[in-house]
Length: 234
Image 1 (cartoon, one colour):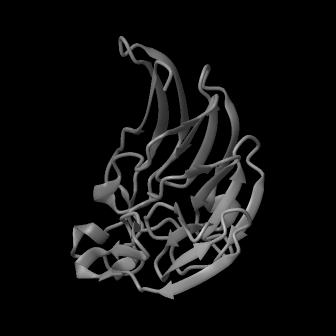
Image 2 (cartoon, helix red, strand yellow):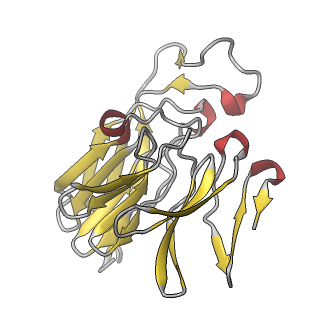
């Protein structure tokens, strides 16, 4: 964006001995379900597009608690709007920084501020800029989807109490002249009014292991979703 490249990464702390086991009960035999504590630091880097030179760096302490084999870095790409860059880390750290300097403008933590229990494979739903709102699939009670004032971080509206937030990205489509925000979480596909978060319709659709991942796709008057293990729907 305007000669700058924004990337995120994670740098693990040197660990002495074995990582802390975070599983409730016996350790699963399937490594895709083994949760461990991995101390580290998430970073947001701003590079000069022409040369790759580091222009600024913002970092913060971020210990990973998700499935151990996925403790390798943030899942969401930075999003630039006007003079701000928005970044969402794997443990639910949402940050707004100035693009010119990396100076923090505001931040939220989904665990602390909304009661999210970190999903098995981390926080992976890309935020969506819609006018003056930044819309995020968050999780927690009455906050499955949250719209923030993208300049101040103030909560504009909250909606839903899904059992788990899933990993899909919110998307806005238009039908019959009406804008609809689609939120696909672990329990259903919800259509919300992006202006206020009020539900327009909902279709129950239980995702396998809460793995609602791909962005819903629109074709004509149909919406397609595809989940893990052959769970698909139109």
